[in-house]
Image 1: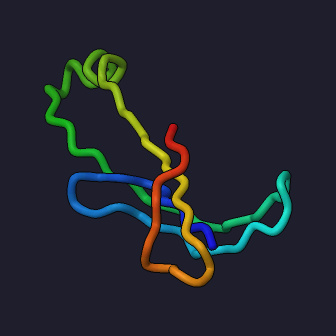
Image 2 (image 1 turned 120 degrees about the vertical axis):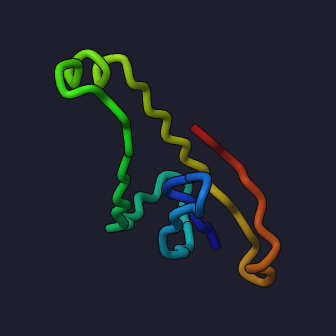
Length: 79
């Protein structure tokens, strides 16, 4: 069984459904979406300047567990 963490924030991560991979190059459609909201304080006359200098980072992790031990998960890849 594999679970994937879609989004990691300081408040709580977003998690997709769990799915099983049976073949090496198997593709799985998750159909998971995560909504992000950023609160940035800007002066009204510097909106474009401030937003163009603002950086956002998104971390994605792939977690793995054996089908017999779904609670024992380990991160196997991150981007």
